[in-house]
Length: 58
Image (tube, rainbow, N blue to C red; front, side, top):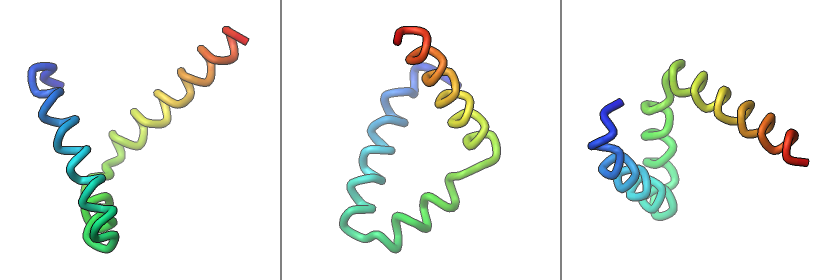
């Protein structure tokens, strides 16, 4: 991932979330098209690592 575009991605995601609040049906369609197996694996790995870090601090 190009870190120079990270701000653009964050702003785009925030806009999609705001649009989903206004039109949930269109937001759900965008979410379905954006979810890829790679994104699911990265999300799962991030959640697992966050769990391990929180558990080690407790």
